[in-house]
Image 1 (spheres, rainbow, N blue to C red):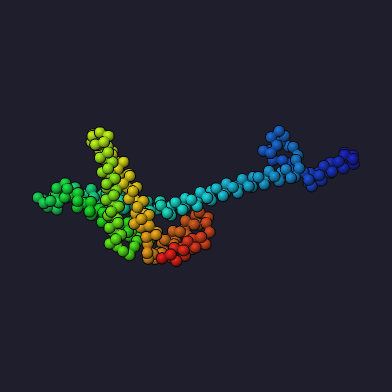
Image 2 (image 1 turned 135 degrees about the horizontal axis):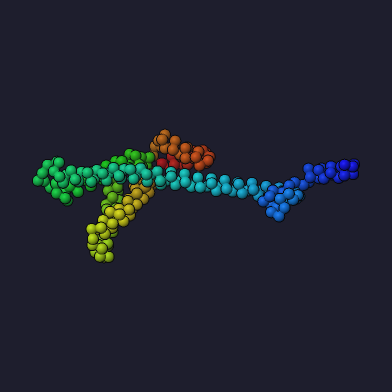
Amino acid sequence: MNDASHGRSLGDGERAGEGWRRCPPTACPSRRDARVPLSCSDDVFATSERRTAHEGSVISRIQRSASYLWERVLRYAVKFGVVGGVGFVIDVGLFNLLRVGVFGDDHFFQGAIGAKLVSTSVAIVFNWIGNRYWTFREHRRSDVLREFAEYVAVAIGGLLIGLLCLWVSHHVLGFTSLLADNISANVVGLVLGTAFRFLLYRFWVWGHHRTTRRELEETDVEVRVIAATLAAAPLEDVTEEIDKEEAGQ
């Protein structure tokens, strides 16, 4: 190799090191080994970085939304479902025990109406205690009698929704079979009635704005801190939210 060609080779190498860079294959579909100006390559890498940052921002927003939904609605719904399931077992079990005469024979509460009256009343009281001291414990109010009265009113409203679904199906639409009655009362009516009760319990009976004297428990603080950590949210936001809630009491 002569000096001239060696000089040209060195010149190319210096030029490649100073102002030229191999373009990524995705940026040069026609020639994989094409050489492009440094500014073009920087634009490609910058675009990739912006795309990565955008995807991270989207994931962060999804995590924050999921955390907010869990904190405000879903964790209450899970506990509400557990309490309601136990209450349903109590209702059905006590009704059948009364009907077969476990608590004595030949009295009003052995009959269908009397047994259902007792079993439903006991289940309502159990559900109120479970929801007050577990599901919505951080929002329970000092005016216990008024809280219980509102709870019973909502429970009756949920019952009326189930009866309305049964009435419309049986008497208006003419679906008079036993299967149709069960679907309208124990499927459609039960779902709508349960949703009605949960929403009013969560946002009215035990709503944040109804709590007049709220003492934030350590468990509630721990739940918020864990949720903020999983969502990559600043802990300052949690403390600020807690301070605002305590200041509003």
